[in-house]
Image (cartoon, rainbow, N blue to C red; front, top):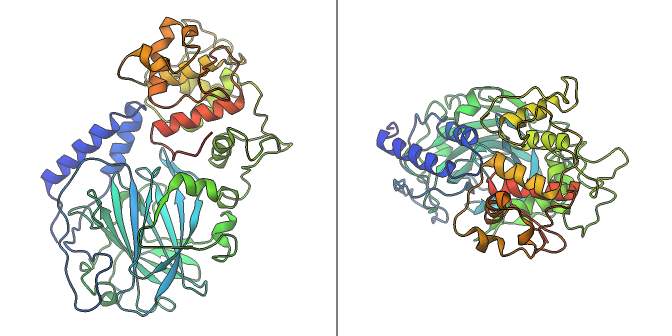
Length: 487
């Protein structure tokens, strides 16, 4: 097996830098994404992979595609194979651990999918570099037979889960995946991960090597030869979330109901068809009520099913960014203060600190939002006009929130400011020093107005519901979260 070609790798780095540099989030987030992209140790480069829907019979080796095309948003195609066995169908329970900085948000359920062996399904729109996807495998009698995790790459990814000849007894899964830049369902050259996971009494071990595995059942029918040493992403072997050589509980007590119940008991099994495609935002929305970890409230007594900002509020609640009150309410019409916005921004965005903190006279060290105010100010959020007072209890207008987002996230725009702002019937009320900022937010699809889409209402006091919607739209524009349906 040949090491990755240095010319290819240099192209990958350049492509990744080019894309992340265009993000509304400034350099720190871009660099963190780039470092995640290049963290992996590509020590093995298998040269063949089996294509989906290949006819049974003699082994056929398919050359790995070496073309490297333009950057795409992260997505993955998931195949399930069993080269040496007789199982006809399996159930794949899919979930996500969304990456946030150097941490992961709690695991979310994304559905139960009934696969025929050799079938594939594609998952798109909203996955990002570094997210961990978890797949728990069951047979059609709901017996747990396998487990895998893989990391989303900064391109489309082709993922193959390969079962043993008898997975009810030998619960070992081979995970073989890598870039599929041109979306042809073939792993591209030089980007391959290849490793084994073993289940024993609901404990999962990520194996260091294949030495004690009967590898012939995993490399039949054209699959690349199994390497002795597993080729893992670096985040699997280093840092606080390393898992190589460790045994983890596949069914932690804190998991969502949908992740611990029997397949088909809470939600209907989704049958994979020839061209099955699933969007992350729709899956998060559909399964939110039963798909979040225990103790997380996503429904509120004063937020109806038809409430205009319900999806944004519920999703931020699911992410543990914005919660409700002890009485079960959300209070969507309550105002938001500067200190409260700072606390929300701290939970949402990770950016380079571009200026030194100020010891605000009205924000003592014991103040509840002291750290949030300090950190978000260092990241470029908030305007103080040279004052050493932050005014933490000041209620914010919609304009205050919009300008804070635009300046902190360094939004840009193209074209004519006047043309962009012409969508607002009250555009004349926007002061000259603010017009470029509002134009940039508009072009980046951050601004959301309700009930009148054409009314910006910049002087109106911002409500919790409006702030939730604007924050989430800003995260969408930065490719940090999946888009959601909205009125």
